[in-house]
Image 1 (tube, rainbow, N blue to C red):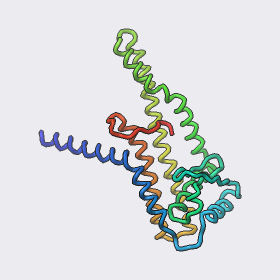
Image 2: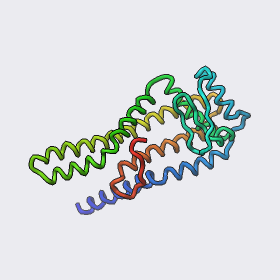
Image 3: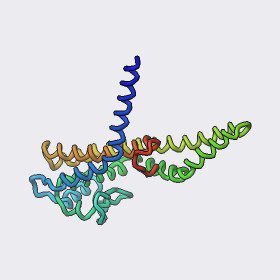
Image 4: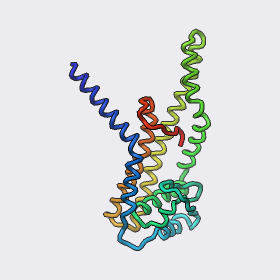
Length: 235
């Protein structure tokens, strides 16, 4: 019986260590993967700008705007605009094409549905109430300790803090789902230009990128260990 308990404890500790490793080092792993894939090039003459131009004409009637930024790995989509780094726009690597396809995948989500708008709304609500998370928990505990008629008020106030925390987790999970969907769109776009061997590299890069979002989720869940890197709740 004791051996069974010890084995369970060991398994839990090993799982915890694995999750902490994912939470703390996936970002570095992604950047290493980025540097590697950014030096690999498909065997064609396609340029990032030509790739964007083709998809923009085919799916967006040339209404999608491209904004050049200087920061590497800060590529994103927002409100009809692709914010792409100079390196992404100028380097015709697997990394550049995959990043562009993924961000255009978000643009396609924005065009065909309300997923991004709903997520942004949730984030705004989260940022609005997020500042009350720690004060709610502390105030709730204090009121419960004081007891008497204040105990139930303490439970209510602490519950509000727990609700904010759960909201943050829901938003992170929703973000992961939307990123996965954008990656599916990206693969569809990439298939128009690349063969199966090229797509394998792009898919692997997309999976590494998605792992960073899972890491962000784990950082929140494992914050109590104090061994996990901090992250913003509602970004």
